[in-house]
Amino acid sequence: MAFNKKKAREEANRGGFYQFAEGENVVRILPPSREYFDKDITYIALTYFLHYGIPEGAPPVTCPKTTDPKNHWNVRCPICEKCKAIKSAADKDDKETQQFVYDRKAKQRYLFNVIVTSDKPDEETKKHKVVKLSVGWKIYKAILDVAQSDKYEDIGDVKKGRGFIINMTPESKTKTGFRDYSVTPEPNPSSVYELLPKDWIEAIEANEKWVEELAAGVLSFEELKSVMENSGIPQFMDGGPSRVQPAKQYGELDEEGNTKGEKSTPEETPEETPAKEETPASKPDCYGKYERGSEKCAKCESRIDCINKFIESQE
Image 1: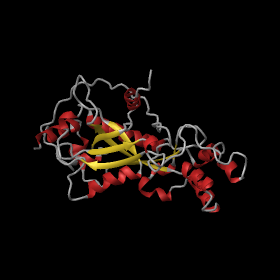
Image 2: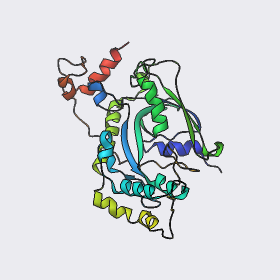
Image 3: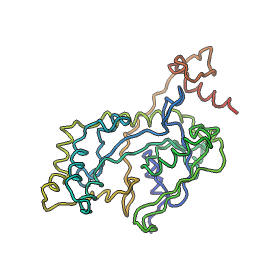
Image 4: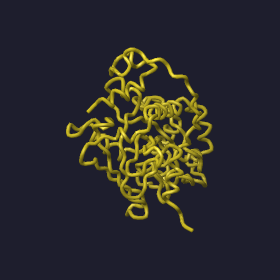
């Protein structure tokens, strides 16, 4: 008997979040949201913020910054304010305190829609499932640099973009004891449209809705203060016996939000409601002539089919 790493990753990935395998992971970045199909955008991923270890051993708590990622510095959060106060009052050489604050301060996460082309496609359909890829700053910045460079194509273009090779070195093979990552764009652009499932646009919109629901479910300032009372933070401020209580489930976090010596646990994904069968609607006269930026097209019931027809027509 042995730990089946491949099966464990497959089980984790069923929750909708991709878990990096050791070595090369080749992913293709898809559009981040519905908005991409309607107009020019300036973002490549959706953003949210999490607090780990609040309280000890519990799942992550969504930070209020998630409600306004673009202006997150203006959003009040009692946990963020307490962490800032602790850090300001502590000596810079007090590594114990600095680690305590780092483990619990808000971690900014970047959510990409991807297909993992280094994994085998579905045996029956020969298509790759659209999954969520949640990463920290290091991986995000590497992808962003490519996205903003004139040397490369639109990374969200499913016909003319290119994939990314993300190499993961596990904790046991690094000097720091934390996972290490390197990100390299594939040498040539390619089409992955034929590898996408029929509902790939719906999957992108569902992932966007997941972030919206995450933001909508943020606890109030007072509710977060109440949660914090059982987190170990007040006791730390008072210099009590339980000064540093790393979250048992998550441990110490590196800059990618991954844990030292263990795999990070993906956020719980709400159970999906089975899609209702719909009767085919009559197609408009302009069917198949999708116009990006058109308000009429954006509101049309045949919008998704038209987008696919439009992409198929591109060389």
